[in-house]
Amino acid sequence: MNAVQSGDRVRIHYTARFADGSVFASSRESGPLDFVAGGSEVIEGVSLAVVGMQVGNRKVVDVPPELAFGPHDDELEQRVALAELPEPVQVGDQLDVRSGERTLRVWVREVVDGQAVFDGNHPLAGQHLIYEIELVSFASGG
Image (tube, rainbow, N blue to C red; front, top):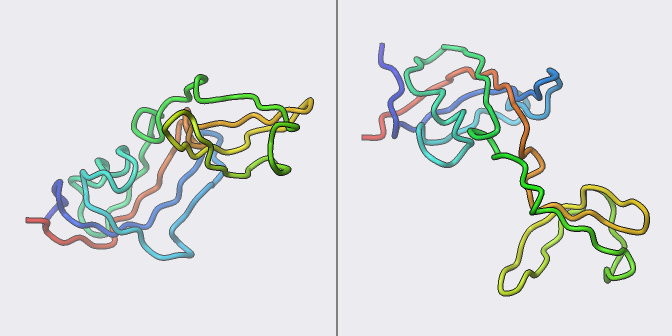
């Protein structure tokens, strides 16, 4: 039986959990996830984990922040007075903000004491994640 190699197109079912075991995403309702093994379409920890798997194999993968959504960078956080914002914001809102020549996608992490905390980190940055993976199928990339 053949095993997945880097460059193969794979389809997996997955359940993604935080380190405390709580589920934050799963393909069981939406259908299998399709991506290139060893590529950059999904987080590196999952992309690399499928290499060597065979159809029907299951595995649990412990994914550190460096192989997931990166470490949390405090420099990507900024406090802004609510009075300076053109419209009201709520925790979880995503906004595009200008920083010099660049436009950055940020999310509102908290609203406290008349200020909003904008965070340019991915919401899962700094998180240690656990993925349960089942290889559904794959096709050779070469």
